[in-house]
Length: 248
Image 1 (cartoon, rainbow, N blue to C red):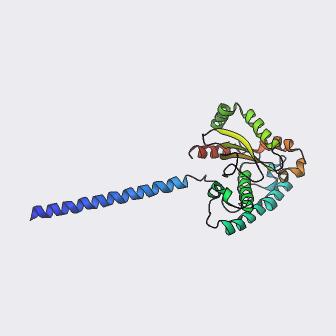
Image 2 (image 1 turned 180 degrees about the vertical axis):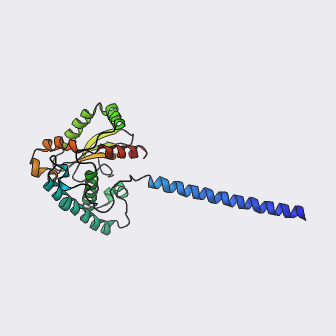
Image 3 (image 1 turned 90 degrees about the vertical axis):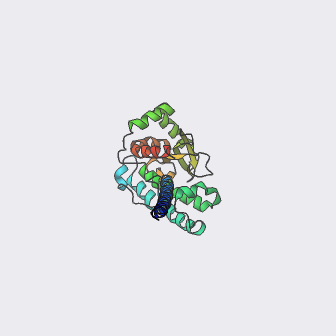
């Protein structure tokens, strides 16, 4: 009798251990999936609303004047956000991440493409600048020197991409699928995350070369604007994006 009770109790204990192990395994798997999913998105990636400008309009002078910044932020960028919100409600109400939208951008209208791109690009652009700029980390400088010869060479390539972009658009430094730095440009408000972009990669740095970004101060002298803009680059943000993109 005692032996039978011992066998029964042992079997129940074994079944309980198996169930607990299965539950722990499922929980770990679920947690792993959640961590993997959250790791797809850069912590500072633009959301779906326009955020407050991280500095005063005049903070980027003399490179960018206060009036240009005010008009750029309150009119142009605000309009992109407003129009994007309308287009999302009509075409893709279930989208909550811009990266997911860009991955299938070719399925949607020009209105959504232009305005979602404009919103993302500008929300990133404000963070790529800082009053007086922020110094480039030594580790990032080493990578640039290894892959693009020098920081000066990167500057020349980016400026060339920006000045040769006909009409409106952006120039970019991206990390491509092979984890290599690439420089290029896109028209209008396209960006390298879009499935229809010829230049593909994770955006590390972007330069706005629409005329509204510089025309009040520089008129048609885009090259002068670009040369002044380099004094504003927030290299800490560029490096943070680079470190994130390495893990994708």
